Image (cartoon, rainbow, N blue to C red; front, side, top):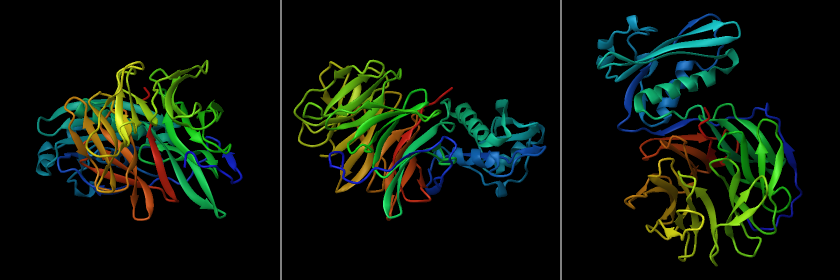
Amino acid sequence: MLLRKLVTVLTLVLVSAGTVRAELLIRITEGADAAVPIAVVPFAESGNIPAGDKLSTVVRSDLAMSGEFSPLPAEKMLSLPSKREDVFFRDWRLLGQRYVLVGELTRQGDRVSARYELFDVNTEERLLGETAAAPASNLRSLAHHVSDKVYEAITGVPGAFSTKLAYVTLDKFNGKPRYRLQVSDVDGKRARIRLESQEPILSPAWSPDGKKLAYVSFETGKPVIFVHELSSGKRTKAADFPGLNSAPAWSEDGRSLLMTLSKDGNAEIYRMDLATKKLTKITNHWAIDTEASWDHTGNGLFFTSDRSGGPQIYYKESERASPRRITFGSRYNARPRPDNSGKFVYYVHQRDRAFHIARTNLKTGEEMILTRTESDESPSVSPNGRMLIYATKQGADSVLTVISADGGAAYSLPASEGDVRDPAWGPLVR
């Protein structure tokens, strides 16, 4: 598709940042056997708290989506305490809970504050106590903040529930294809369209500050890489060379992009300085080299190459280093996405005509297939390295699925309209 000649007439619409569209839906498909039981008690409320999703409901869903926690349904709770003196730890032990979260929401003018406490049920120790506030119109962000704090207090790893997802949806409008680049919360809520076109939009990639997206658009009749400022909607062409312009990936400092260009006849990986547009050629081989991404150090890079006869993952410790092959488990391994610890690289893996998401331990070389679906593509790792999102098929529908990084739990996020593909997990922004 990247190289086909487009003959249809372009229809392109830039959509304002305030336009809200159909959201993704969360569908539980598989739980984790070793998930930690936690009780997120419905928060008490004081004042006029906006209707809609309750803060505790969002926190419960966030923690469940991580695959590491099994929240207790509210209807199974024996009591609904909102502060420590009302918590009877014996009751929560009787229910088999390891942790309990209690709190209260208070409305003060146009803001809502949340006072909350997290307890270890076995030791009766308070692990977390905090008050946080947000505009009354933004309770979902407050809920994601609480989820992040609870997750970090228990695991020691920052939560990723306040981050964003970018993805592309495809449906039909007046009999013509309609591609939409959308950005949503990590749970698929509050989706907003950033770009709409009759032509394909591919490979969204987040800048490290979370303020920009790079992506490939066919709106001019050929693949072109754009950089899109989300707050203003301003777009600039980053790469519009003859031939292929594809697979953008940001550097750690946000000053350059890795990309695949075929301007000299063969698909090679380049690094572009965005301020000067200077290109540095990273690979130089007769094979197709593409889908590059930086490692956790920001110095080395992974990429896909067919130099061994079929698509495989290769790694260069620096731009000038010789590449070495990482994957050997099948004749097709592509689209590498490393985690932020340097321990694993995730990718699309073919086995018995099915495409799965797999990972390789970079120290031991051990490969592990993570998914049980059969048409999986486009893996993207959460910024804390604990979750993974990818696109797959459920029947005739293309959906996004979130799994824990070890494949232990799965939650699908189908679009309410059309297919959804090419997910990109946004960065942690403090």
